[in-house]
Length: 373
Image 1 (cartoon, rainbow, N blue to C red):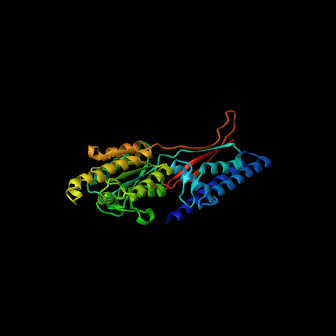
Image 2 (cartoon, rainbow, N blue to C red):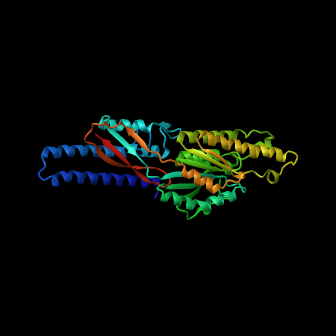
Image 3 (cartoon, rainbow, N blue to C red):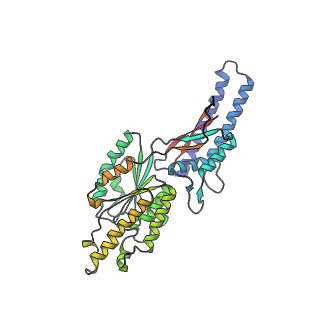
């Protein structure tokens, strides 16, 4: 079943749940209050008729200029942890907070507050340079330690879904390497969808931008030992520059991740210049050291720094599994609160539970609470 069908069925189920709840509440006034007054029943019936209208509009009515309902937009907002939400050139930046405030103000006139606390489910994307043989031992360590790390976090109430994204196909790293791992999945990034350029198996700049835009992870981890798109353009030009293709790719990665609120952590090893560049021995090692080692460190440090992440050099003897564990443990669970502060002298507050579909890898639904006074 496709995701569109699943989303439709989910929304229909949510409407059914709300409808049954309303029916039960109204029935309560008939049977649980002895001899209820007709006027009170009509007032409560009108109130919950209005709640039905709110629910239908919240889950079914698409916002003008988009293909998404307010509940779906709010799910994207919760997943990214940031407002406005970037939807690309077609929809641009959408101020979901403002749309939500306008919506509830229409019904409750600044007498409401909406709160969502995700129950700890977090999406993480790991972007892997599949051409690197020098990083295979580090990836193997991550694969071996990840199940225990995720199990430990789950026992503490934090469920993390880790999706490995392979750049440009399968080479040294394959999706079969991650089979049967709980809360873990793997996919090969589409060259056409993600606009991978240069050496596609190393284009982590466009790759992380694609992941941030389409999967909205809280954190992305890049594992590579070359600049985005490879260090060959630098080697072939006999110049220290990474080249325009790599520069464009990295800029895309930084701008998209910043817009989506995705923090980027980068892991690298030392590119083996003495054995791998293998062209003219007169310039090989020195040029490779600039193009494939120094440039890699510079650009991986840059994207990590500008997205509030961290750069790690695995050649310094750091355990890759321990780094991943630290990164996952440090991810905060972000609470979303919209609306108005509740006056202290209010004696009666009504609370309504509203389920929000959040488009993370786990396809979970989180509970939102609407307080009205």
